[in-house]
Amino acid sequence: MFRGLINSFKNTSKLHSTTFFNSNNCSRSFVHISQQLRKVHLMADKEKVFKFAGIQLLCGDNKEENVQNAIKHIDEAAKNGAKLISLPECFNSPYSTATFEKYSESEEGETVKKLSEAAKRNQIFLIGGSIPEIDKETGKIYNTCFIFNDKGEMIKKHRKIHLFDIDVPNKIRFKESETLTPGDSFSVVDIGYCKVGVAICYDIRFPELAMLYSKMGAKFLVYPGAFNMVTGPAHWELLQRGRAVDNQVFVAAISPARNPSSTYQAWGHSTIVNPWGTILATTDEHQSIIYSDIDLNTLNETRSSIPIYSQKRTDLYKLDSINPINPI
Ligand SMILES: NC(=O)CCC(=O)C(=O)O
Image (cartoon, rainbow, N blue to C red):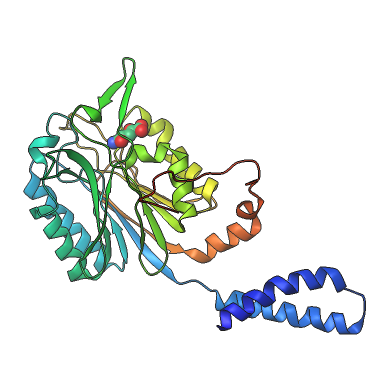
């Protein structure tokens, strides 16, 4: 209630201070009180800070070893104080259309069970990178990120919406759609500190999705991803900083480490960016964990300094979800 009162006072005081300023003593005290209240409002709105960890895992052909390695690193990141942890795309299998089916598991499988246990044991929110997921009813295979709360409950699964189908002549050709089916729902979860939007790798190239997530209240966008040696150097960082600045949100993209013996050479360089576009943490191609405090006060500062949200010309253009299952 206190915050509600202050909010309405903040709005009216803005109006009154411009209308009556300097007209008489009474209005000057009114302005003074309104300034004090706005200070109290800012203090009342001070956001909590939490630590995020992105695990750049070295992934190979052995599924069991990949999962064990992931769990070991989750335990380490949690011990170091992370409250939200993300794994990379396709962390329990090779990133290859030829093997997605062989490695696929349903949501009742061993990988999901292990991730759930790790989230519960460490009392952390976990964005489980992605795995090839088989839908037992339809037999379709998806590139899926399972997301867990700090009790180990699965709170969402994001099936990659935009499949990575590209052909850059003489450089790289990849067609996820040869074996995968695209998902069709949005994934924004509440982790207590803020809402987090989750999407996978190629999904980052679609600014509309990031805008929709931001419109749904996400203040942090996390993309488990695996760019390659062609598009990685050119676009990986640029896309993250673009999504961050466009929407004034935190963005993280978490990659597998580069494995010289795999057919797909991941770019690595997992990165965390703040709403100003500043890189908070990054790394090279090797296995490592990157950490950063996610300080939502800096998000509020950016948004109040450059108020694009209130300046949007919604009388001229508008972005809406047309999927009735996922209203915004
Ligand atoms: N796994 C992916 O979706 C790769 C996306 C990618 O490399 C790109 O350039 O986009």
